[in-house]
Every structure is written in C-alpha cells, then in structure tokens.
Image (cartoon, rainbow, N blue to C red; front, side, top):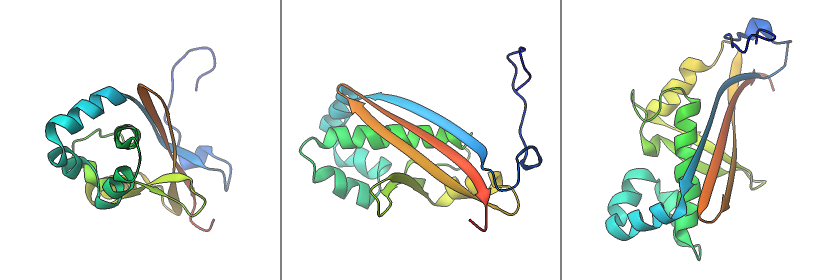
Length: 155
C-alpha cells in the first residue's frame, strides 16, 4: 500500500521475501441462520443438493441444529468465491467449493471444477495455494472468512 494515500497496489511474488506467503485472495460473508432455516423448510433437498456436497450434507444432518452448520458452510462458500475474485460466476459453482476438515479439525476448502481452475490460474509459478477458513456463529448470525495464500511449493 502507498503510505498515507489509502490506495492499494497489486503485490507480486517479487515483492515478497523468499519463502514468505503471498495473499492471493480474501473473502468474508455473513449469513442469517434463520434465512437458511426458512430456505431448508421451503426447498429442503432441492436447496441442499444444489449447494452442498454429499459429505457436507451428511455432516450437517448429524447435528442437532443442522441449519447452523449449513449456514456456516454457506457463508464459507460465499467467502471462498469472493476470495477467488469471481463470486458465483465464470464457471465457479456452489459444489465446486466444499468445506472439509483437516485431521486437526481445522476447516479448509476442497476445490474442484471451475473453482479449482480459478485457484490454479491465481497460483504464482513455483508456489502452491493454502486455504485457511474460519467459521463462527452467534445465532442468528453465521460468519466465515477465507484467506488464500501462496506459499513455496517445497513447503
């Protein structure tokens, strides 16, 4: 950023110190859990099968309050689409982005199809992208933040 001007400039891998991560994308989204609950009541499987993978649906349906799980994951998908810089267009679809958990329990995103293609197009040469996700809710609100960083491919 230019100091004092409030304007931003693009950062390339040449601007980063060797081995340091480069921010590729950042997205955030907030969802009203009650809206997701109404959508589930009105559309049921038509909604869940359009937006969520089978694994995401299975995880949500095991919960006491599945609408909270669906809302957090819905927010994560929106945030991921923003971090990719496309939103839900240009070949990026809901089920191309799945919230999955690492063995530690930490959430991340598994990308396929158009979302994966977009991520690959954003990944600088000699680097790989890591997707960090944070999910939270304080009913009636659910929130997700997605940070995509490029790190050296050898890490």
